[in-house]
Each structure stands twice: as C-alpha cells, then as structure tokens.
Amino acid sequence: MPVWGIVLIVVLLAIFLPASIKVLREYERGVIFRLGRLVGTKGPGIFVIIPFVDRMVKVDLRIITMDVPYQEVITRDNVTVRVNAVVYFRVLDPEASVVKVLDFIRATSQISQTTLRSVLGQSELDGLLSERERLNQILQKTIDEQTDPWGVKVTAVEIKEVELAETMKRSMAAQAEAERERRAKIIHAEGELQASAKLAEAGHIIGREPTTLQLRYLETLTNIAAEKNSTIIFPLPINIFEAFTNMSKLGKALSSGEEEEK
Image (cartoon, rainbow, N blue to C red; front, side, top):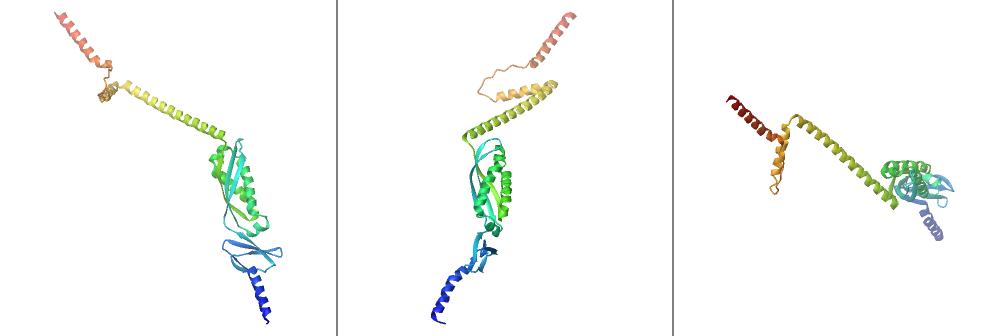
C-alpha cells in the first residue's frame, strides 16, 4: 500500500472515529435519529453511531430545579398578591421529551406560571397563607398531568413567598390585634365567671357555718400583722361583743332577782 493510502486511512479514521464513538454518563441518555427518523435511545456508557447519518440528542435525567417568577394573582376574595414558586421535575421518557415538545424546560416553565395563577386564583387569601401544603399538592398534580405527555415528571412544587400590598399588611395586622383583644376579653370574662361562682359557693358555706367567717377574719389579722411598717385601723365584727352583751344581760337578771327576794 502506498504511503499516501496509509495517510488517507489515518486521516479518515481521525475524522470518523470521534464522530462515531460516543460516551454518556450514568445520568445521560442519547436519543438517536437516523436520516431524520427516530431509531431509539442509547446510553449510558460507550456506543457507536454512524457518522453523518445518525444524529444524537443528549438528554439529562437528573432533577431540574426551576424558579417560577413572581406572578400577579387575584384571589377569590379579590385580593391582589404576588406569588413565586419553585418546581422540581425530571425526564422519565427521553424520546418523548425530544420528539413531542420543542423545549421541555421552557414549556414546563410556562405551564407552571399559568397553573400557578389559575390554582391560586381559586383560593381565598386566608387559605393561601395557611394551607400551602394543600395548594402545593394541587399545583404538583395539575402541572404533572400536563407535562406527562412530554415524558416529564413533576416531583414537587413549593410556593416560596406571598407578597401583599402595604395597606393589606396593615389591615391584617389590625385584624390580628383585634382578634387577640377579643380572645383576651373572653378569657377575662370566663375567669370572672369562674371566680363569681366560687365566691357564691363560699358565701353559701359561710352562711351555713358562721364559724368560717371568724376563721377568715383571724387569717386576715395574721396577714395584716406581717406588715410592721403600717398602722391599720379595722372594725371588730359585732359577733365578738355578743358574749359581753349576754354577760351584761345575765348580770341584770341576777340583780333584779335578788331585789325581788328582799
């Protein structure tokens, strides 16, 4: 074989070998088109394609994290809010993601934005702020149903932030303050009701047992005696003088009896 023939073979091998030998990582797949027709998916690892006849489109199977930009949403109770979210999705069917949609990442982004406005627009503001987990599940299911024909699986959707107008923030703060005051008044009223019930019960007991009033009086004296820096004037209960009154009456009765005997 002449030298120029060997040189030609070497040149052809240098051109065709890099174009025909492909190596894909574990998380990559190659969708092969032969003269424009889909012939299948290859990878991972090393494989050979026909140069200038086969064309390979590389697809990444890892989970893609995509931010959904802020969307203006009007809730069901006519409150305007700005909401953003994050979507996690991955390719399950490489062939469908290449053949059935031009750009599955951009298509998923657009469908996520429209779904975010649609789903949150059916919810009231209180539900949007307090039921995020439920809304996240609805968003994930709705978006996944629309991306499923493209071979794309939406694994999770998370609402990141809900922005309110300043006037709405002030109104909500005033509402929360009024709610706290209402609860405080209810708790105070319940305490007064319980205290009045206990006082009424104590009054009935004291009414049945007058001795308990004396015990309470002595307890009050003990508490007052603990304060040595104050001078306190307090009235004595009438019951204390009943003994002296009875003794006086007895003495008068005895005196009148002696006079009659005389």
